[in-house]
Image (tube, rainbow, N blue to C red; front, side, top):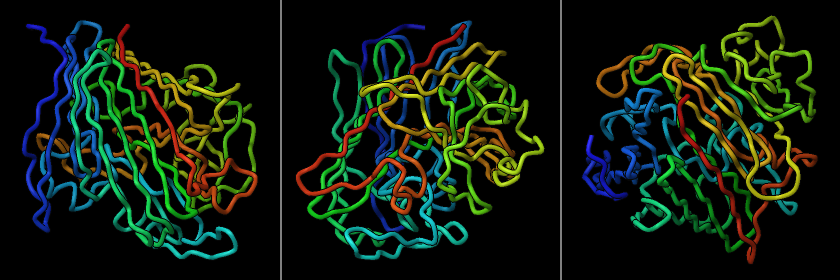
Amino acid sequence: MTLTPPRVTKDNFGTTADGKFVEAYTLRNNKGMEAVVLTYGGIIQSLKAPDRTGAFDDIVMGFDTVAEYEAGSPYFGSLIGRVGNRIANGTFTLDGKAYTLAKNNGPNHLHGGVKGWDKLIWAADPFQDETGAGVLLTLTSPDGDEGYPGKVTAHVKYTLTPDNRLIVDYHATTDAPTVINLTQHSYFNLGGAQTTDILGHELMINADRFTPVDATLIPTGDLASVEGTPFDFRTSTAIGARIDADHVQIKHGPGYDHNWVLNRSGEGLQLAATVHEPVTGRTLEIRTTEPGLQFYAGNFLDGTLKGKGGRVYPRRSGFCLETQHFPDSPNQPSFPSIELRPGGEYKSQTVFAFGAR
């Protein structure tokens, strides 16, 4: 194939049910890798990466139309805000005041509510420079949005670099005390578009502990050792090796849908996880400034969703590795805080590095 310089192109991806235009920005580097980012939900709609032979394939799940995303996407490729993951009973208290949120996941609040940031239109500003090809997305969330206090201005920058890294930079400010925990919710399958499941992927998570959950997937507050459990991914292990083990936490999942407490020393980017797909040789390395990593193995996919090109998405056909603060942090004083106050800045970075061996 002919290689071209890094560049960004813009296309129309359709309109939402209420008539808003959705743009698609395609980021390309000079090695042929490309990412398609939508202004609807900041979604990574497509991500094409090479295997060990140099053959490119789309390694993320998603849909071909806006209507399909609106009809009931399980957060395929979305930017999640204001607060990623679950908040127990849809309530939290900040500075002595109680706030009530939607209960959109059983008894709990999930991923920012009924119309979280994954369902809003972001403003987009594309760029091309020596760092790569990218797009800066901006969103203003008003005071009271989905029940959260404070007007928040958020910026998320996607950069596709010449060395096949996708860098996600998050930034937010507020005019009143609030809580914020942003993440990226891509479902990966490094085997490519025709691979039926992710159970053979070999996963390493750089964590000695995880946060056990109750039957509704809310953390108990404990930081449990992974030693001797199906949650020990400190050495690379097939995702499917213990996914149905006889363990109470696996039963709660059902399977893997838990937060790992990343091993960190100091500040800055540090290794969170690596993934290897042995058939194609594709690899993924994740580094982040965040303290936690939610590993979700697609347990709730059930074959009823048809994605890009009409492909059916069966159970466990994609996995998520969501860098973030811990679930239910506003109600867990012992967890790292997600409070954001006027004059402060929320800053976070995660790097997805793709390769093959």
